[in-house]
Amino acid sequence: MKHTPKFAVITTALAASLAFTACTSQAATKDAPKEAPKVLTGIAERLVEEGYPGAIITRTLPDGTAETATAGTADLATAAPIPADAEVRIGSASKTFTAVVALQLVEEGLLELDRSVDTYLPGLIKGKGIDPQAITVRQLLQHTSGLPEYTTEVIVKDTFGQRDAYRSPRDVLDLALERPADFPAGERHQYTNTNYIALGLIIERVTQRPLAELIHDRIVTPLDLKHTYLPEPGETGLRGEHPLGYHIDAEGELRDITDADPSWTWAAGAMVSTPAELNTFMKAVLDGELLEPAELDQMLTGILTGDELFPGSTYGLGIESSELSAGTAWGHNGDIPGYQTRNAVAEDGTAVTITLTALPFAIYDGPQDEIFEGPQEELLDLYRVSIEALDEALSTP
Image: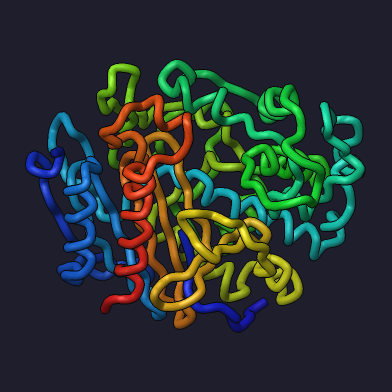
């Protein structure tokens, strides 16, 4: 299923006390670490100077060689160094894994992109202003269904209070459907995690197998990924070496949020990986190793998002684009309490993933209530910092 890519690039005050380390690793050949390129170490250090507890930048070259720089610390209490290619929660970058499985099922005739969700989940998707006959699988993948968001009430306003709560996918969907539709299906793009909760349920319904198993068998095993997985129900910790992830508490302090139940985000954002393995996966997707040409073309057919942070960006089927210095970009970013991930793959096969161990609003100095009142320019600037870092890491030798 090898396919030539048709795109260019993908997207998407503590500093003084933090230790700084840098190294490289040969992901494909397991050679001994070497000194990281100065550009990567400099970018990682500047990210920590912005206030992030830790930063990992991995650049994978076309031949599979992975160069990694780390800055900051894996643990604010001990100043321990960050492992060079540590496990991290990748948040919404999980959506690309879910989308790949869905598109493989399209190849196999088990799913049709333009069939209604009611075909696959009869009677389940319903609510005020929601027409399950009008919402298609494609609209779930592309965030044009109009289904309401649930995450603000579930987690954003009470992150630490919810950290140990297990929520089944059905519970999450039911919570979302308590709210009315945001707009009629197909009217516009609006990024909504509910779409991928519904998509995960459809995948499990048509295969009669759990999503975690499907991701493992269809993606993880063929790519020989050792640290990439969708956590099992009840699994709250990370299995391998990892930096702690930090989030802001009610008192405005950064606290360890690493061990937490990610069930509330499931198919939309619960996965764990490493920066190098996420690069491997994204390169494989875009090189056509996981999808046939027809399905990959569908995946890369995007619609404008109107995103203020990504002018000119589009969203395809579980993958997003933006404009970077090297050209048009496709990939998927991921935010989850404790971890922020940005990734990109260039036309020549070079891939970059940056992971920071806090979200922008966790290190935001402004009033926390402003976060929920709408985007503030200073807060948006913190989001731009990681995007600019990604751009530089990809475009500078």
